[in-house]
Amino acid sequence: MAYCSGILRHMSDINRRDFLSTSAAAAAIITPVSLARKQPHARKPRAPVAISSGNGLPAVNKAVELIREGADPVDAIVAGVGIVEDDPNDMSVGYGGLPNERGEVELDACVMHGPSHKAGSVAGLRRIKNPAAVALRVLRLTNHAMLVGEGALEFARGQGFKEENLLTNRAREAWLRWRAELSRTDDWLTEDQQVPNDVVPLRDTSDIPFTEGTIHCSAVDTNGDLAGVTSTSGLSYKIPGRVGDSPIIGAGNFTDNLVGSAGATGRGESVIKSCGAFQVVQHMANGDEPTEACLKALKWIANHTRRGRLRNERGEPNFQVTFYALRKDGAYGSACMRGRRTFAIHDGADGRIERCTPLYE
Ligand code: ASP
Image (spheres, rainbow, N blue to C red):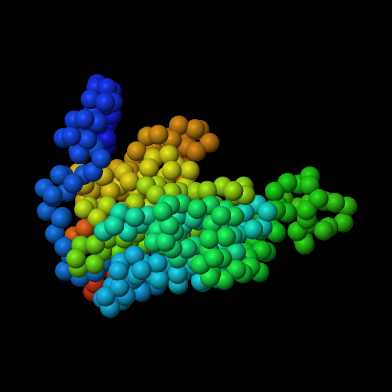
């Protein structure tokens, strides 16, 4: 924070040309190399480490297993996340994810590879259940960083990914109920609204599935090489074409091989506007412990949440965001905006679930 605001103050004091020609200043801003070199965390970890969101225990287990077998961390995490994308019971990711307001599943994902500092991303991808693997092909096989919508689908088809219906019966039923409960004056009814005399009972809609899901996974190998991936079906019942933070490099996912890797889940609009994952990595570059780095980025979001609709009676954000951070030396941490959230970690010894540190209780 102090680092960022210091830079902004500095930038307003000098003109752009002077600024860019001042190599010392440019180096300090464009890359945290000098900072990272001074940090003890530039050490390599003794064992591979992988961190993931609470739904990612199979992902961290798989990622560490593959890294041990010699896989590049980026291949290992994409394979790990693929297990959750394939799982029809996870309604926040891949196959079985909750659809947009028209009943279509639209997926977002991005991948970042530390050693090459390359990134690949797809957004609004339909009918392909492994968007993270498609994003990895964008990273490896194109000169681009991001493909969206029809273009992303065409690319995936060309790469041999199988097209299929991603809407499971369970997700379809949730969407039908959500639609029927939207308004009491439209023509959509649920089964039990079909009562005599059009007397529509008051209903509790809190059981309609709505995901605050997504999977993020970051990993580091024993060379200190990092990678990160985030994959999601996005906000449930979103407006078609809505893109969240997950495929936005620097928002839902960011990796700097000199420092660490971070990712986010939760209200994507707030993570985009805060460059969330980038902030977390920058805080680690400045010497913050991973959990502290996550808490600082959450605090920044809280301080910039000005719309009353998004704040509770105490003025705090009323939505969830969770950050996950992995440092180059294998240190890790996670923090959430509030309440009880969990994350998955494999530290080379075993895979387990741990509690995120909440900013607000
Ligand atoms: N971050 C995801 C998005 O905004 C959703 C989530 O994690 O709940 O698309």
